[in-house]
Length: 172
Image (cartoon, rainbow, N blue to C red; front, side, top):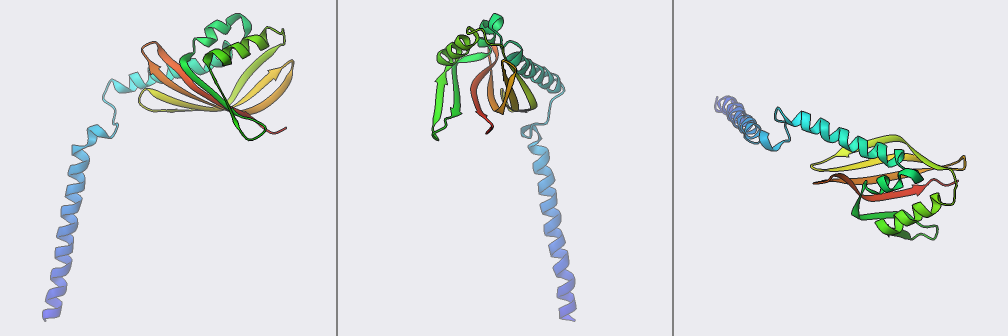
């Protein structure tokens, strides 16, 4: 009899413990709902506007990439921009905005027909930051070279700015 009495009490104690734990978990979820990123009524609109602004920067990154609009293209970048790419000997080449922009302008001024397009664009957003990754196709005098591109953007008082750019060409 004692054995069956203990058995009937053990599940009851276990269920009480589980009920208390479940109640605590629900209370914790309710108490911290504000910290979960649940959107307030006006946040979806702000997020939508933010996403649209990021998409505009990405569209302008390729759309303004031409000699006549190169100064407007440069304005997409923050003054602290770092551009990095792997070198053939296993190193990393890094440039800041002035050097990167000069190289682009000098290349356009050769008169070559150059353009770039992005494919498979992915945008991951955070609080006032975004990461964009894409496949790119660089077209030089009709010859296409493919690669991968990553952009990091930060929302500033002047709008979204590209702060970092990393790329690599696919092996031929």
